[in-house]
Image 1 (cartoon, rainbow, N blue to C red):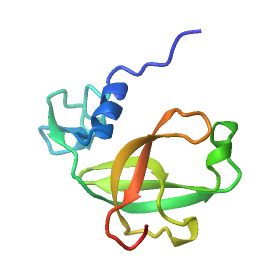
Image 2 (image 1 turned 90 degrees about the vertical axis):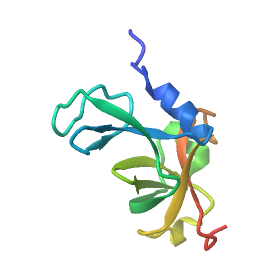
Image 3 (image 1 turned 30 degrees about the horizontal axis):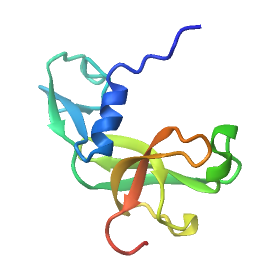
Length: 132
């Protein structure tokens, strides 16, 4: 069995974890996340690397109360989709009671270990001071 392809993704996680998150933008202004080598919207292969905005906004979320075994110790937790400029990241929202998570909340993105497996996962933290 072959290993999953992570070319570029591990580097993306390391950059995000160190506060240097980035994304790619094609010459037509479409944003995409690594490890893409072409724009999924228009096929353009001329991708520029740009800094990921420091904050994003939650556009949707769900609370997981019955997790897969890989996230048993994390439950209940909020999985959220957050817009950071022209790209969207999916991650775990921490530092907020699941009942208090709201669309429109402003978050920062980082990488933290799963409580269950210690695997790295994209993590959102509130940055507006309303949730601690």
